[in-house]
Image (cartoon, rainbow, N blue to C red):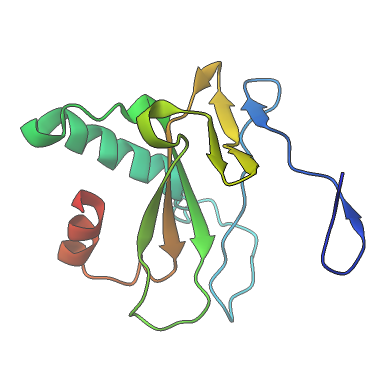
Length: 151
């Protein structure tokens, strides 16, 4: 336990999070502002599973683009976060490494040691988290979306 600025005690996050068939990755519906979820009609289009779609796209890019063959997509966790405002300008996506320099799990800065939080999916450790800012990313043109993904 550590003490926060307001004097309350806080528990640090676990150093390793694991997801598998018994405890799957969390899923969440994203509903645009001003819309309500409604019962789906039989012939209604299937909702978009954003992370599955982005994983499929990124897998295909890493497989087909010679400059990106070194990327190990099975070790990249794909996620999204809501953007703070509806402006089309600002952060579209970010990549968070889950290691310090030279693959270290712990880094000392002065007298304090920092340790990365580790993520495991089906027993495989993730090396990066690729996070897209929604709905800002989705509101880009097709070309801008591809530029963001390749960047």
